Length: 404
Image (cartoon, rainbow, N blue to C red; front, top):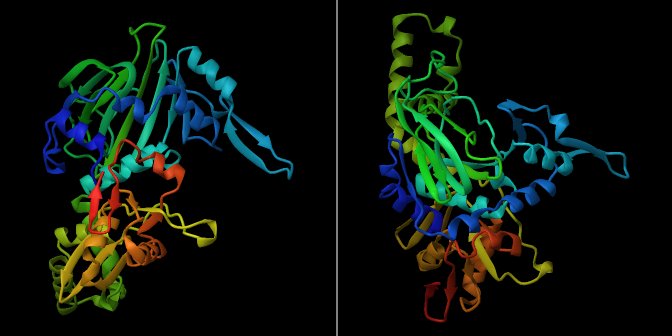
């Protein structure tokens, strides 16, 4: 899937694909000045908050470096059926921001189609699950205390400016659940400076960092978004082997009844065989092929003809051809099609919006089947807005498809 944000990040950070993301801190600047406004503005973030039923910790507020109690910015409304719903008190939120506060919306990709698509594109690009958080600060505002994250972070400054300090790790590749706690910050400062509109940086897992607007002036603001990329590790692979072992009766049998060298050797041999059969490479491929889509829109013909579709799997589908057939593995499904469908399948599962007009009835039937299987979704106006000017679309003529 081609996406302007991924192209911009790669150029800004000097990357050549996700393999170069590595474990190094790096920063740069987006060459496209219109990209940041296209992604998000302060008022659009506030509009998203206004229109949703939110609760803590999905919406959080900070002032003077401390987290505020949810009652200071959330209100409970009772509808005519006496059902209570929690939502942001926009007047209170305005006072917090106007007084030098910070508002944070976690998982903005679950509410906003632009970030839904951006996170999906980054997931296809990196092969890992991706989510996005948005941070809006006004005036001179303390940030979070010096901390580290258990996932890689790509931070993009969308408007305004914010001062950062990034330090190296004090424990190599720490985890949320770890053998020991990681509490002592590194003293090695890798970079200290100010992120301005269009700046982007990569903070690897375990690198200590903090951000603040102190000293930036009481009239300014900062809006930035962080894309969290949760990478699979050797531990997650071992957890997968543990879950897979449940299918074997010998692993489910009580250890007390497994006493004796022969029984112990049997379990060890079976575990080694399981690790060989599902090596780390096959584990990653299986994980990406079996992860179901987070969101799916059904197609109902009564609402009108199907005009555009787009793939909505968390990871790029795997398409292989053999013996006059084409197999598709994605979203927990493994489907087989006639070999003649390969070209259309590659378009429909490209991650680009596909306009079906001109493609004929066979393309329409194929699109409807992929929607029914949960791999694609109809492209309505709301979802389409997440692709417009960011991801090129596919159009069909009578002869072939074209990317526009």
